[in-house]
Amino acid sequence: MSKVKVIPCSGIGKVYGLMARETVLQVTDVLSKDTAETVCLAHIVTGDDSAKEKIKGCSCITVDGCPALCSAKSVENAGGIIRAKYRAVDEMRNHRGKNAGTATALTEDGWQIVDEFAGKISAKVTELLEEESRNA
Ligand code: SF4
Image 1 (cartoon, rainbow, N blue to C red):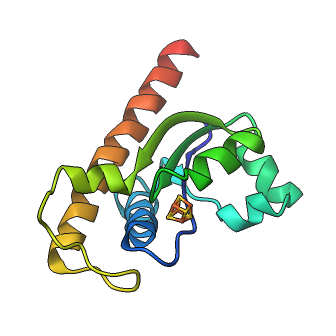
Image 2 (image 1 turned 180 degrees about the vertical axis):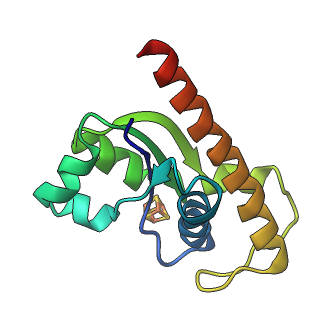
């Protein structure tokens, strides 16, 4: 069974983009390293065949910073099957009043929010794979 692709946006000027990227790395490098992997969004957007090949027809989870949904739109255009979409900005709504940091550095609160967010996405990876094996 192929790994679930978990793909963050490339947000660079806002804390939400940093949160999206750090969250995905936590999922693909730590919590779900045997069952999930990431693909560089810029590589997908530029139309690289090998990057597109990796996601075409595969279960994907997108993690965007904000409502612009750059990852979700690009993954969908490239033929990935989006099974779940997340946005860091929504995650912040569960932590009103907390300062997550800046575009370049997370605060201690920011890292805690990222840990919680990553746990949620990792649980979704497990759920999707269980669903796929039931339907196999
Ligand atoms: S989804 Fe928002 S934060 Fe992410 S790359 Fe697009 S505009 Fe930037």
